Image (cartoon, rainbow over all chains, first blue to last red; front, top):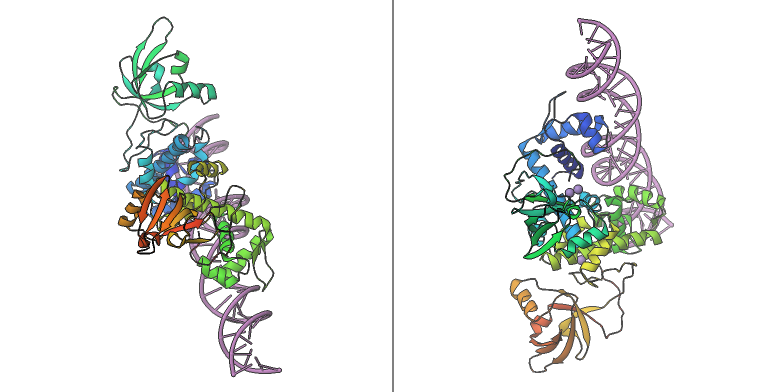
Length: 228
Length: 228
DNA sequence: TAAATTTGTTAGACTAGCCTAACTTTACTT
DNA sequence: AAGTAAAGTTAGGCTAGTCTAACAAATTTA
Ligand SMILES: [Mn+2]
Ligand SMILES: [Mn+2]
Ligand SMILES: [Mn+2]
Ligand SMILES: [Mn+2]
């Protein structure tokens, strides 16, 4: 069993990618490089990281697997807080940071099921499935989506009450399917269909909905913005 | 902010009551008396326990308040796991033992609301309310309840599938109100009403349902069985 | 290519929480 | 009232995880 600290190191390495250095990881975790160095020796000993003196750090297969489990739990809990407990977009992370360390396979399974196996968390990040699979995904705004395509809402960019009310009114919420019926050249107003309900939305509204296209081919690399 | 360890010491003192000794607490926590001694000095320093060398240990007002918060969280999470995630009676404790340390006032409030402000956890123990109030309560089996009285189901004694199926069929679940309509002298079969639905139940069934009478006067002291 | 800068490592120290072993106080028994 | 047993304390030591300060390697820059 890994300690919470060890779990956090693995998760951080996962977010930093395979070319991480000691200082970089130290900054990311908010500790000193000396502390990271100590921990790397322990994690190497446990076969969770590949690490040689003065070399770049990377996760082993086992380390990566562990890291993904934690990311999965983090994002499932964020989704839970957002969807069931009306936490806002910006409140979920801090609590998920704690909840991700709860040890119970059954709890994770039930949580996943309870949320109806969500694909994205409230920040629009992909939730790894129970097998640890994590499809690469190309996010864009609803405004950028092609007419005729089907897509999945993965996040909002605006978190203000009026906007969110509007979102609710249109029948939208995260992990919902949307079909783009039309975009009018005149004022760029769009027609969309959600759960059989057709709505007309403004370009401003459309630009604040983040989606993943279900009809576009997958491509693109993950960026380095906010993680989790 | 208290560490998880400190929280566990406070909670244990709460369960042991105000005449606890060093060894007793050590056994309860599964550590050595020397460790307890160290921690007591720290907790005294923080004004959370009353403690003098060779004297009995007790919680201060502040310590008790903290302890009750943790018990509240523990029991709310147990109820959550039981009611929403189909954990059994005996599975909830271990996970609640972890969840009780999650720090988020909002989460606790939402959890309470989500569960509809439950009064009892799946073991039939009283859940302290948001103010830290914890009414003393006299538990007995449904079989022992007086005819004509109203009571609240607080726990089951049998956790087998056939029994639980029967419980469901009768429309019963924890925190539900039950009215005892009759008990037949011939075979001690009972008539009860749950949510307007009348059922006839066997004495064996009734003996496996733990209730609190809503019509009886409150009395009795808390025992020292399984806690939490 | 040599100096300067950045990056990474090591040694030594600290705290929290635990331990064992030895000791002291209190409580119980005869 | 002694003597023994039980309960409680202390000293010293261990590990995990952190730190600072000094040092070493690698990289950048002149
Ligand atoms: Mn997050
Ligand atoms: Mn997230
Ligand atoms: Mn419990
Ligand atoms: Mn309980």
